[in-house]
Image (spheres, each protein chain N blue to C red):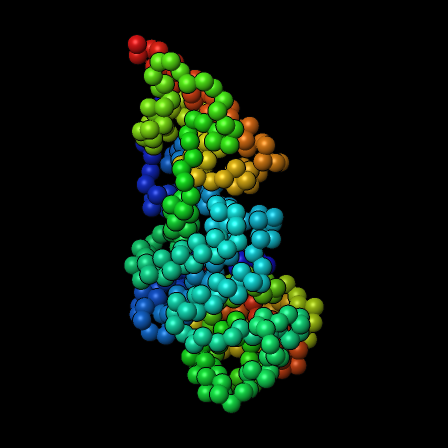
Length: 196
Length: 235
């Protein structure tokens, strides 16, 4: 079962119909048609996050309802497919807890607590997105950056990262995440030493 | 490795940057910045889910979300979903679809539904019984009939192609306005392709406006499948 092929022109035509009169039958039908073109994609993205059918259906419904309400205000000129992705992605991110940036939560305690203040802990607490982004660019390679960002800020589960990076299996994504976390932690500790 | 950090872009703007040529400097940022690259990779995955991922979406999920969408639009009263007679897949428990469809209390409801909206989730028997009512285009994401490339010809006509349906005896091209009201049909013959001359294209297309179309696979007068919609605009 496949979604219809992306068609920006059709999306735009339907959006204009919605915008012309969102309350009349044609506007409602256009809105329904437009969301119908994306409902499979929305569901699959939600499933990627929650990994359970019933929760994915609930989340997909929330996304569709949210998109339905916001459609009449959609800003023309930008791609509807992008807007639909961002709407879905934002709802999914809010639906799952934020994983640790520097610890693999699934690996358990892998080091003893440091005797002196741990710069990684402070960093973790602040979670300054811009600071993290700059640190990643400085110290990680492209795939490491992507995997860690997707895991920690996009809150994508390991299986989702595996699919996104087209890795052969989940252990590939996990190894990438561990390496990235190790390098980031080392960079933070080096920075803390320089500061003292 | 050291790289001077660059300024990031807002989410709203990212979508527009994707439309820029590869040589644009802003496109280069998308590759180096983890935040932007994650969004772009995510977007591409969202648009084109992998074959493995797509297996997680089947008839039940489609029916569920389509029914939810219909409730959002308020277009259809709470009706039981139809039974697909051909597949023998009972989508509602208890009783064949035709007994439900033609029970007297439902006839008025069906008439209202036929006028207001004819949606893919509600099968009302052979489509020929609905000829003459005002069909309204609605969402369809589950059909196997996939449209191919639509080519606008220099003389103002179009060439369409689609995946063949194994049981189709002939095909029909259906045109709709952007308000999703049907504005015309053209017989497309037995082959999964057709060239339509300018004189046979809808007036709105000849005027340079966007036209929506779908392909219907037919056997006799009965409709087997209808494709998802595509759009056409004269260059």
